Length: 303
Image 1: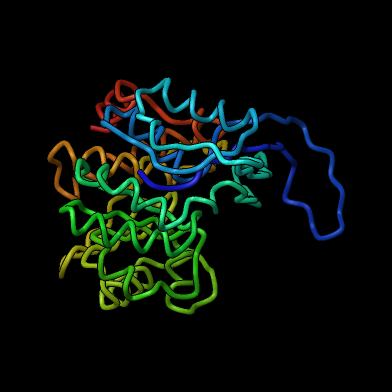
Image 2: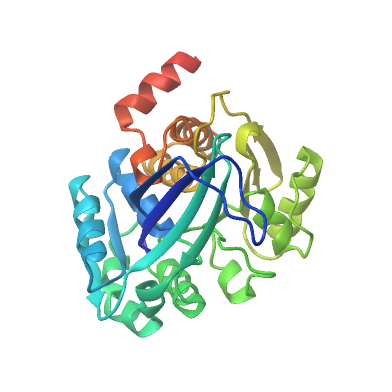
């Protein structure tokens, strides 16, 4: 796992405020987050053998985030502390489970390509390398290149979304996993909820840009898997959503764990949509991650 570590500052609000508006919230709490750390934490808690590479600040948040990952068995020896503050995310969550997020990267932007070269030997031990876009883009590109050179499969969560992903990144990505908003933005369309037909069309366009497999995460509708010429809609179980923060990260982690255990991509997607569905029934990013036993029981209920 190569990516970001953030401390989430979460406020529960009646709705997302308009510009210039002040609202009274009902609850505040802090939780460990960051897309990279969320995926590392979730993969470890779901039974994967996980190591994390990244940067935290020299503050108390950095120590707490590393300890939290270590508590679920994630190898944190590749996370170094740098002078200054750790990454922070300010998150507003409504009663309907919708959220609005502002990220201040801080230490995350200090994990540079030169640092990755020092950590290159760790990539030789990986079967799957999971990437996001909350660290410098040149670091992400080099990580994808080096991972492929070492024989690993690369899973890229293209978030926060860019108008376009560089071709020298996409051609080293095995599995691209945008959500609906990100998928639209990656081909220059305005963010919007997508029909299944739209999602399929966009997935085909993204495949043409370099990634053989594209999985469009479609929230409560599940995910659309475009693998080579085959397209499959994998539905998600219906649950009452409390907080959707990090549901996409849980999906990616569960997908990687399932595939590393030998599951097919369709089986991996089914495992992943159930993990994500279970996570949205709980508050917080990493606190919402189910254990492997909880997920297995939930899957059994679905059958």
